[in-house]
Image 1 (cartoon, rainbow, N blue to C red):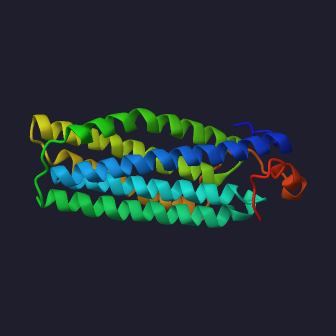
Image 2: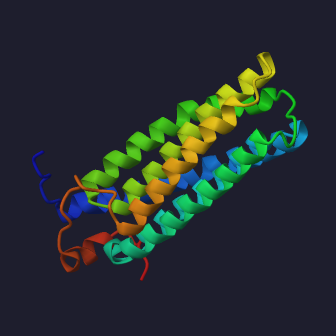
Image 3: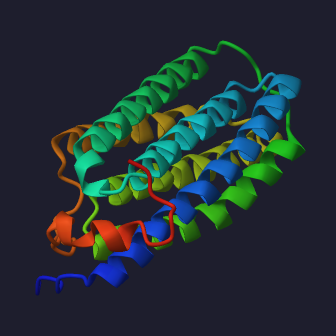
Length: 228
């Protein structure tokens, strides 16, 4: 694969701003999704929906990490710390999903059908892939392993949305309660792998090379959106 060309200062400023905006959009959507999922899960006694709602708030935390990084005058200086924080969020996600899946397999709690849950899962299956595509494209061009890692967090949320949708539909129509926790265990394993890669900083092999930061400081803060 041919290595991407280095970015101009102006292009990097634009991509930094886009990264922040995508993170704001992700945080806003997932906060609303989490509240709806938790309420629907409590009403239907659905551990899968409750777990999905908690995952939404983990996704919010990942987006806030990206916002924190790109509010800096020199976002590259916060890259390593941001990656480790995202790695922790992956591990938290894996721990919760794995725990919830084992509980479901052991037959603890029979969930009732949830039309609201089916609806929010279906919406997320459409919305999340769009965010994944935008984040990954931006992160790779920017040369930011943090943004690419955050896109993987969103991709896992997409998988969980699809799994939840299938599980809720099967539970509502056929009473198959075992399919969801089995698939969730696979997602938990993937989350652990992605967390390890984020911790090591291995999320962006084909990113654009990062230009020297000092040349970009003035341009980065031209719109007064960056902080010290």
